[in-house]
Length: 96
Image (cartoon, rainbow, N blue to C red; front, side):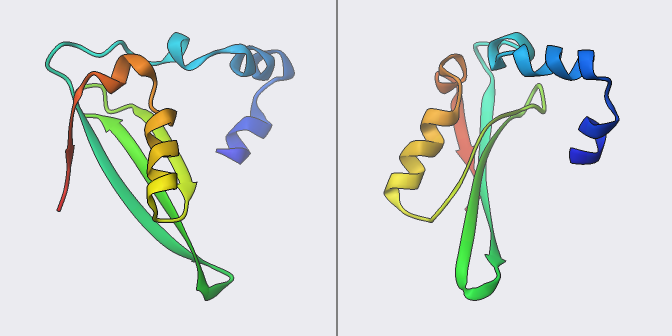
């Protein structure tokens, strides 16, 4: 992604920066479902883990929200706040 951004012209980059999620994301339908999942990775040592929570619209296949943090209730709340409000009304599913 970083390499792609470097290759874009300055004018186009400015246009991308000015876009809000509302202008880019496909509006959810009444039967849409969000797939919620998480992955973790070690950062510098085994004692330092980072968790990435993400939400993907199943129909649109768009990443609608994500949060990097620890695996605790506080980070989970921040993750929910990262999901745009129009997508929060969707049913959600998580793999066990």
